[in-house]
Length: 116
Image 1 (cartoon, rainbow, N blue to C red):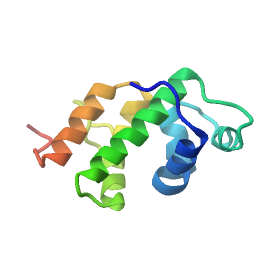
Image 2 (cartoon, rainbow, N blue to C red):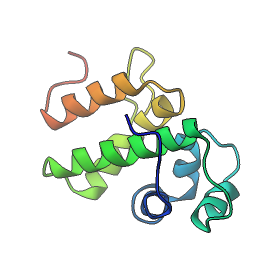
Image 3 (tube, rainbow, N blue to C red):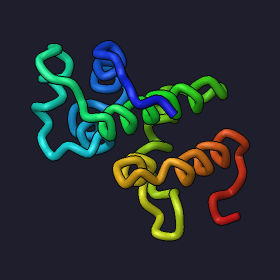
Image 4 (cartoon, rainbow, N blue to C red):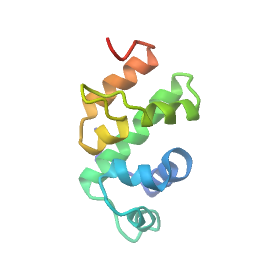
């Protein structure tokens, strides 16, 4: 799993996928303004934050590549569908539950019911 993320990738998450609030959520930061600091190159995410951001972009692109629209990918990403506690993939990523998110993405891509 990647532990680095580029400024361009953070901008892509912020501007084209998730917006400020969800980008901050998945990274684990509690301050939205950190996103601008990273995008301006004034600071860099910690290794944990970078890993979460890189994973998020990779999984969203994987779902989109399976012939789902970006809007459909966002709907999956914000829906409650991961694990027994039914949190969103974004919340699960924040908690470093990468395997569960990967499984949720696989079920979504393969159109397997989430209750299975």
